Amino acid sequence: MLTIDRINRMGSEEFVSALGLIFENSPWVARSAWDSRPFVNAETLHGVMFDQVLQRDASARIEFLRAHPDLAGKEAKEGRMTTESTAEQGTAGLDRLSSGEAALIDDLNRRYRARHGFPFVICVRHYTKAGIFAEFTHRLERGTDMELEEALRQISYISRYRLGSMLAPAAAPHE
Image (cartoon, rainbow, N blue to C red; front, side, top):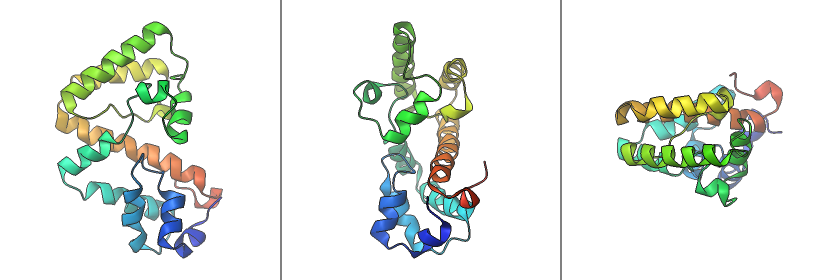
């Protein structure tokens, strides 16, 4: 387990190696945040990292979102998701979909991506499988600007969980 003190002493490469997976397939977030050391606590560290994403323009944020896999999509079926995403999707049973559920989620993924230009992102730990399907359907109908904001909000939750799982209990960010 890491501590904030240990993180603050890390060199750039060690920092990126240790924290680069907090944001899906985007080690640049950790690389960009390293210069802001020292971090007072986990909340500050998370805030600085998330700000690296928020400081980008809309097209860069969309590219950042495109680094995320489709929910229970092709990457999951082929075993190519990160360990973190695999575990997270498993918490809601997305690794055990019926054939009908798998076909429905494939259709929802396709439609969502076609409408918004990036994958549907949700913090699956906050939802049941039924809740995820309901959110998918609801969010598919919203405008892309609203969905960009919502996807980033969901990534904030996901990344807080990921950071918290790496840190010693006293250092973990508050949920």
